[in-house]
Image 1: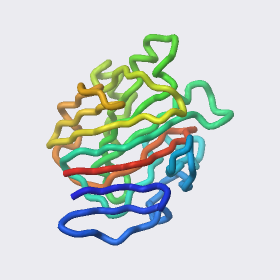
Image 2: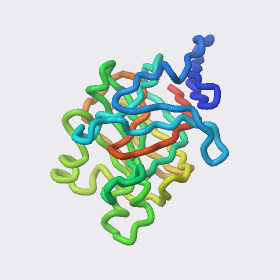
Image 3: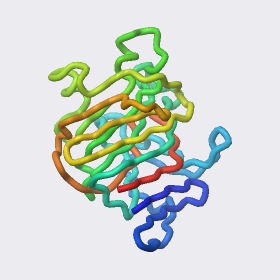
Length: 219
């Protein structure tokens, strides 16, 4: 099966011994976000913007891609992340891909980037440029507190600039690759939900505006 997300046409295509009819971006299942089809830096994209109440916790903002049912395989996408105007300095542009998402969005695994950390003058912030989380029980705060540095790492990033990511998933293991690197940026050998299956989601953090394009899924 191959899934290609084309932002300009606002559609989702899935191939598996045949094609499933195209669905528009308007049918993405939006949870506390707003979605628009735009041209960003000369590229067709879907813009995802935080539309949640200010007190809503991390992990509650995503757009679930209709018709996806992912268990094992490779997810590739291009994305950007940045802070919305007027947000605090602590907003680092959290943007990523959720996978094995439950229908209600209450349970999933996720890799995301913190683009504003990529070239920070603070080395500690640089070390937190990529992150794995597992919703609902393992947010980044718990993982960092209980297992420092195990589920996050450094990669060169620029806020608002396109980055290409690849996520390889097999059973309870996953790897994150960024910008075509031959070696993974982040390795997770114990996905917290173990072996599971679910949808794919376009994921952002609080106070973030992000862009997504060229989502490709290969089982």
